[in-house]
Amino acid sequence: MTGVRRISILGATGSIGRNTLDVVGKHPSLFRAVALACRSDWQGLVPLARRFGPRVAALFDEEAAARAEEALKGTGIKVLGGLGGLLEAASLQEADTVVSSIVGSAGIMPTFAAVEAGKVVALANKEALVAAGRLITREAGRTGASIIPVDSEHSAVFQALMGQDRSAVRRIVLTASGGPFFGKGPEALAGVTPEMALDHPNWKMGPKVTVDSATMMNKGLEVIEARWLFDIPAENICVLVHPQSIVHSMVEFTDGSTLAQMGIADMRIPISFALGFPRRIDLGLEPLDLTALGKLEFYEPDREMFPCLDLAYEALRREGTMPAVLNAANEAAVEAFLEGRLPFGAIPEVVRAVMDTPPVFDGDTLAGILKGDRMVREAARGIISRYGEHP
Ligand code: MG
Image (cartoon, rainbow, N blue to C red):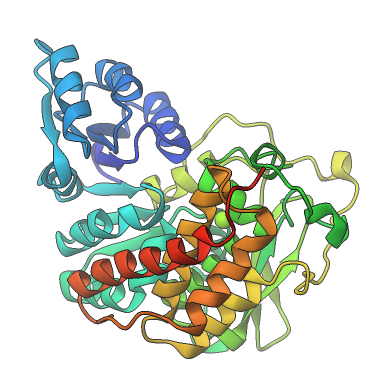
């Protein structure tokens, strides 16, 4: 690694963004933040901009951008607003690496813009690959952009595949913590409140991914993400529940070897790997103490209790626009659950219903996928409204 790597962070105020800035802040000789972008949290963004002094701060929400501009007057930081601002931060000429960590399908366009600009993309936004995997990987092939996963499971697989004979890969084994309801029995899912779903045992994450972990849709989305990142068919990707979250994923080879990547559950590890690749960064973290843990456990996922996992496999099998349908329907359902408009157990029901009569749209263009995303949400909202007020 030569010189300082210049980083643009999309989703700077979120969990991944803040962890990224923690790594950047500890290693000023290696990394510099040149752009910080977020959706609307100007009060979160302004202190980060003051501290890290990027050239550009971008906010999707125009009103929030105006507030940020006022607050950053005299700092020399250029404040950009709207989708245009976000896309400029994603393709900024002086950025070497773009951290794509805007949550949900809002991250599709900025991720595509970074890939289109040929950047190194440290990808945390899994929804972009779920909804537009073919399009994004094809564009990366055209521009030479490299996509390095930040998702801990995919970072593990990426690391286990380094220097390996790809034709000897038999299976990818993604591990799942199981979330807060693992091993509790189906009755535990009745009356789940957002607070209960947001109480993840191992990882500190944003609300969308935490709810997805509780339904195991997160693992389903990760199976689709793995399909595109590693160009491996769905039937060769399997999921194991591993409650300790120490083995972050594994690759099985035809000679009977299995390579696993292990570490404590700290997102700064996969983030720093993506930022520094191929160099590893000393994070000053406590080493992994396996004797203190004593045991590592692995279980088959309970596919009846968590039907979202098989919905994702089904979407991948049905191909075409179906993964985008799954993704948008899930996002609408999770949003409704967090706002108290949908019971927890109805999240897979909504996704199932939309997948049964999916809107028809063009999955081969970015415009088509974004339009489809809106159509699916609309369809999901219609289904959600029939559940009425959830106490
Ligand atoms: Mg993950």
